[in-house]
Image (tube, rainbow, N blue to C red; front, side, top):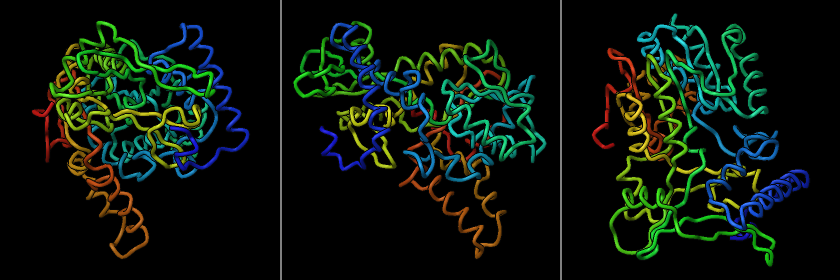
Amino acid sequence: MPVATLDLPLPTPEARAHSERLVGHIRNEIARCGGWIAFARYMDLALYAPGLGYYAAGATKLGPAGDFVTAPEISPLFAMALAVQVAAILDASRQREIVELGAGSGRLAADLLNALAGCAAEPSHYRILEPSPDLRARQRATLARTAPAHLSRVEWLDALPAKIDGALVANEVLDAMPVHLAARRGARWVERGVVWNAADRALTWKERPADARLEALAAARFPATAGDYLSEINPAAEALVEDVGKRLVAGAALFVDYGFPGKEYYHPQRSEGTLMCHYRHRAHADPFAWPGLTDITAHVDFTAMAEAGERAGLAVAGFAAQAPFLMGCGILEALAATGAPDTVAYFTAASGVHKLLSPAEMGELVKVLALARSEGIAWPGYALVDHRHRL
């Protein structure tokens, strides 16, 4: 699909030049690997290549001036509600620390710290694992501006700590991890990858036989239906969840993301997968459109993530859509406390809460998975709905 057919706004000359530099870097990697790279490698470079990838360069990603908006930017009441569950997890730990994976703009960290302080449930430390220097700087600025009293508790990490004793929070992290694209073509199993088309001077798709591991994973998960079928497999996300589980000595981990249980993820009618791109608040399906300027995501197979946690000895403590989770944590009560229903403050807050709870927005599409090491944790987030049986 040529970029010109996507009806996307043109980048500035500077941004376009940046994208072309990243394409050159990817072309070199393709050549180094013999002319073909797996899509997972392409996605990794497009998002995280040092100084060039979408999350590793300096352009604004989140908020009205970026390409998409996450729940913490939509409303501070998201963090206020999440803090109720996080406080319950901290109560079951000894060190009372929070580790956040990929903190985005820093909005969630700031709002969580303020909310936890408001209910006398402050963590001992707030550690952020963030590979992007640009986002680290933005997170520090956000915290200094909106939660200055808590900035001394915050530490940035280059890798997961050896032990995690408290609450781990990952909001829209797993969906940005590089995925492999597997496909069943008749009786053959193939992997979709990326090559450089010299004639068109463009990146394009090419499939080759899948290796034994990818074929086994796809064969076990894909529906046994007639016809071709393509979808994502995400060993990197599964490995991350398992690694977190091995390091979590007390407390629990919360994974908040777009996704489905396995049987719904690999539904017969979802035969082209879930891969999606975002550029200036426009969703499209071409991951080759402006590499380095476009976010690339895939929905999360929460069954695979739950099984990864269980392999590390964690228990699946709850699974629900975002709307009932936030309602169980008191988001509607927090909304009511913003002011009288006929005030501007209330209408502004209500608009954000609607986006968080509406089935047509984030309320049903986003799920919350809790994986716990400690017993005896209170789970207000699953008081209304707990769909563990669907995993």
